[in-house]
Length: 219
Image (cartoon, rainbow, N blue to C red; front, side):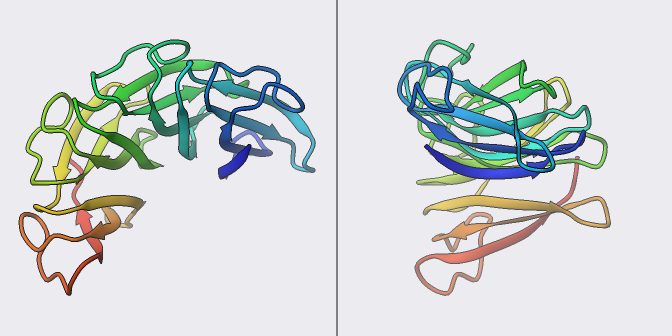
């Protein structure tokens, strides 16, 4: 069992996500393999509730983002084809996200990907309560077309109901990953990651893996 990401919940207390393969102790239920695990704590650290999400494969979260309704969006990856994973894209590993309400009940889930390997590596709320999600992809089909080479970064904007507004694939011919983002005061977003490329969308590489920063204008 591992804790990976935590946020202050909008209705007070804390929401913590991590992975678990347990089916005892503090974990009341496991779907098989590793599950997303979310724990709600009160302001003084007492357990309010805990829930697991996933299927019989491996479901591994990377981030949790609080939402305006008191719930949260949890993002990561999945190899499951069942359980809480309602749709798969065809690759062995897809990016997976679930939206939960303040009680931990699933409002919607969404997989993203193609025939390659995808994962969600960051998520942040937008200025109006939508979500900006990003990660890595090796696909050139499905949700991610226009791949530049080995591994590209991707960014997707979803509304509160999980409907896609737009998607951008970015990178060069080598390995490019997007790990973090923040909203700027001008309404745009600063994206941070790493890149081995020196072509495509990436210029000025100093050798091997560089830190990669760029500004993204909202569409």
